[in-house]
Image 1: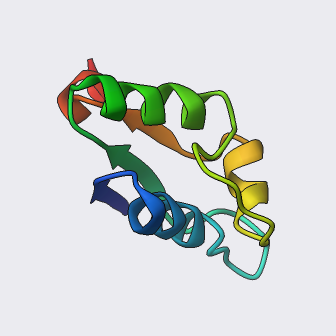
Image 2: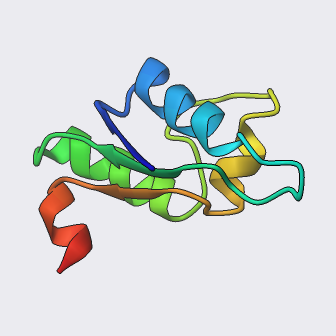
Length: 83
């Protein structure tokens, strides 16, 4: 199953990270997660940062590991992720 989260600000980025941490009893990811933001300078900056494995804002919680491990995909165009 694939989840797509629109908006990668504080709430959207954290939501993507939280969903990506869900695993089955064998520790396999339960969901594919795609984060989408606007094709603007701010949106593209967030996408670039997250694709490098870094939140675009300060955080010290456990969600950071899923972003650092690059378990997620981010794009201004979710259709492009499947091409």
